[in-house]
Length: 408
Image 1 (cartoon, one colour):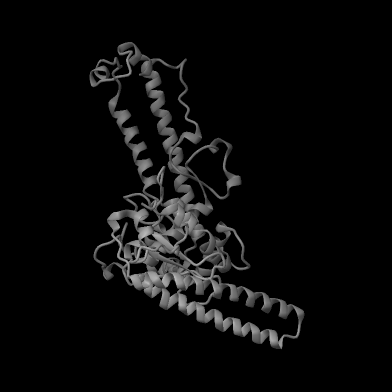
Image 2 (cartoon, rainbow, N blue to C red; image 1 turned 180 degrees about the vertical axis):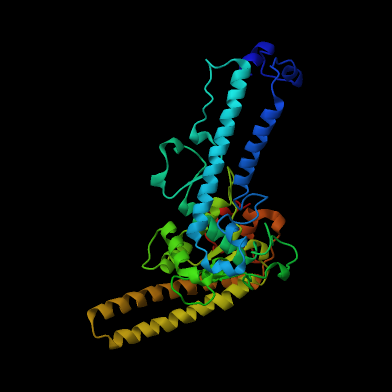
């Protein structure tokens, strides 16, 4: 076409009439239409498998479970759902590749281009996802593709969906978005109840009975069954990697250190930056206080509730634990006992100091009872929620510099 259009019209201004006069050979339209429609369907089903699609229904790693009767869920392993999903993606990849090459052969034959063109399509140019267990497993033929994912990527997206269920954005009982603003409907949440106050704390130890790891365990039991909880936690931890002596510790460290970064990567606009919908209140490097909220459920009382019900509660816990460590030091009989208690007490003291400093900042915002307008978008609201009624800015959210709008 490019060669022919230069003959028909050598200028750079191509009009509809230039397309109409383009010579073409009559072909079997039905065959081409069928192949094209199947290619489109493969691409659409791949795109819709991820939550950034408008037509996202549910996560692929829970789709097989939801099709089962409740009595069978106690036997479900995420590993089996993952294997089935990998097979589905591989089949879709192979079918799309075969169809694209079939289309190439049709047009090569029509125009007699056998000596000029090859019908083969490189693996890296097939635009549906293909999943590999690790980066080391990625085939050489897929290097350079934007559609390569790993087991970690799939588990990260599963955790993102789970957090969505915790906030009520998604529901195990409703397809697609369950809540993204507007009127709240409790009837959408039968199998798993979302967090009541729209605040999910992330702690470096198991201090609270409603922190994010505890809620995740509850969600996993509801979805996959109670008898497989340990195996499923092991699968998640193995896929995530990272530090920790147990699966729960590895998962806890992931939420502490990497979840928000992965969330911002998922919810970003090319050329315009990050647009997170779950916002992380973060006291600092000591992990003294971290808590997620869902933007679409935020109200003027959210920060005040977060301060009183969670920040102040953690401060009391740190004080109590610090005193307990001092008692351990006073009665310790071995150097190892002394070293462990001393190290933990030092960490708790740093976290307590960090929380006190954070409380001074967040108090101004809580008293200001800031209202947000979802129509303003993430960038504007990210700055607005951190600006008190006197116009003073307090940096209380994670990665503010790279997310919020520029100051006018």
